[in-house]
Length: 183
Image 1 (cartoon, rainbow, N blue to C red):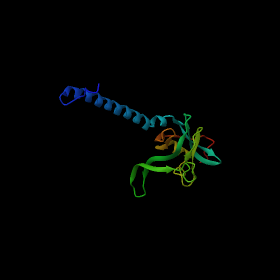
Image 2: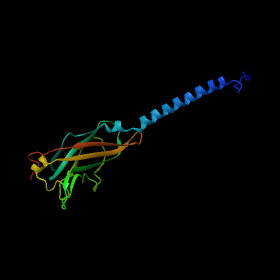
Image 3: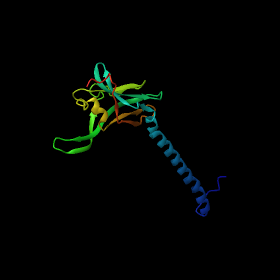
Image 4: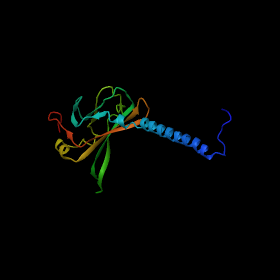
């Protein structure tokens, strides 16, 4: 058994030895790549986060608030989840410049830390309509007819893998209950 070896006298034997070794290395690399892609894509996790279909303006703790709901369908928790909202609408500046997609942040608790979420059950996220809110000077009639979008972005990490993800929702109209709005 110890006397038969592949030598430079037999090129077919060298090719026969190298071919399965190279092919095996390629299959291993492909399998490792497939596993890495599967682990590193948390987009399926973001699909298990659900947002309410409508945002509403109503009273909450005797304050007028814009509210929407977010929930998690999975049992595994989301780590370091945070939420933010942006109002996108056209704007005319005092100088007469027209900005078609002006972005304004809506406060959903950044100052108080309420933007950090622990999603063990569905949560109602609220934006208080006060003097700092872009909705402060808007009447109910204007709110129903104005053209705007509210983009809500929820970011966090998947607990099992530590990979970050982002889930987004878009609201193009706001429901206003009759008894909720006093303007």
